[in-house]
Image (cartoon, rainbow, N blue to C red; front, side, top):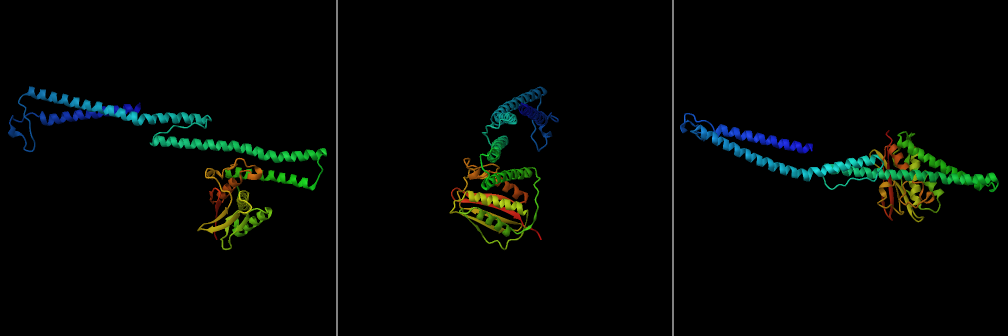
Length: 367
């Protein structure tokens, strides 16, 4: 309503200025009194209309003013109608969008994450509404991941704890005989719990910006070789792991233990998604300031719909996978956090049925 009032007042002011200008022009040219009543007294550069009678002059002036005023009023009414039409077409839909945006924002603040704004135009207000919808989509997705994370954490903790509790009760009651194999199983379950809690702690520290790194000048070739050989020996009969030559790589400024964890997570992930006859390749490339390490496989690949979310914690592309077949779902999230903590980047390329390529960068050690 304020915009409409401003437009009407502006139109009225413009009309008043037009009327005043027309009147002044009439009085200065048409209604000018004759100088001596002779046409010869007019300057040669302009045309003079000599009015012999004051009464006639007044009548002509009044008629001109009335005509000019009527013309201005017609222009004003026409302008007002056009302005109102433009308001109906342009402004009112924007005001409606703003109202919907305010209502949706209030509902979103109350926890209704499914509320969206109906967008039909391409103006600035509509762009704001689209941004709001995108934010709401992201919040809804993050909330869904959070709920899944809580459920998954409870499941990942409950399974080994239940196993340990069951075996311990059997040992206490004498139902299960004490055997070295049993103690080895209990030890593995406890180690699983330790790894899970440690991974969660890494994510929590990274989120809080308190993840400590013990950086040293390290040989990436030796590190890659150690991790790859360890996993290859621990997974006989799985896909082959090939390391391309890295002897001439510059030293990198990293926390060796953290990068071993990164590489171990990527190779473990590749082994889990590559058939036994498949291949996993580790290679490196050097730029001016960073070394890029690439882990590629010939496995099942990742669906394009899932590709943007593979680094989300507790996200599984295949929801049917369990802890045994698909891991806990936080390995790639840890990879992302650790690489970012080193000042590097990590990305993934994949084609469904053709394999995946994970690439991360690490800073070169400056001499």
